[in-house]
Each structure stands twice: as C-alpha cells, then as structure tokens.
Image (cartoon, rainbow, N blue to C red):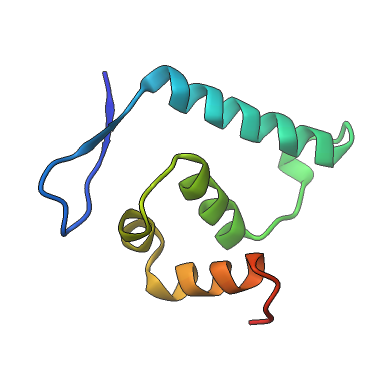
Length: 87
C-alpha cells in the first residue's frame, strides 16, 4: 500500500515510498527520544503546530501540500518561528 497526498491544485497524486515514510517517522521519533533524555515521549511537552510542520517538511510535502494539511495561518506562523522571526 502506498500513501498518497493530494492538494487541491494537484493534477496527480504524489506517491510516497512506504519504507521511506516509515524511516522518516522512525528517525523523527528517535530525535524526540534523544530530546526526552530517557523520559517517556508521552510526558514531553511540545508545540503541536511545530511538530505537524516538522512532519510535513520531513515527508517532503510541497508548500501547497503543507498549506493544505496545516492551513495557511499555521504554515505562516511555523515558517516565521522556524526562520527566527517572532510570531
């Protein structure tokens, strides 16, 4: 089974390789485990918006796909935050 992401302007879906997607998500989890320093990831407090933004970036979604998934306001705020500008 392949995962498909489609945005409103897309004429054809972009297929993500399932193995690559699983590896991306596993790497993301491992990074959070490092940040948690042995604590359970269930106990880690984090910005949901930035986590979602990071996932869409790691999955190589296009800017249009990111806007579709996140919504324009969250995408704009996350980009400003990541680029070091205050919100």
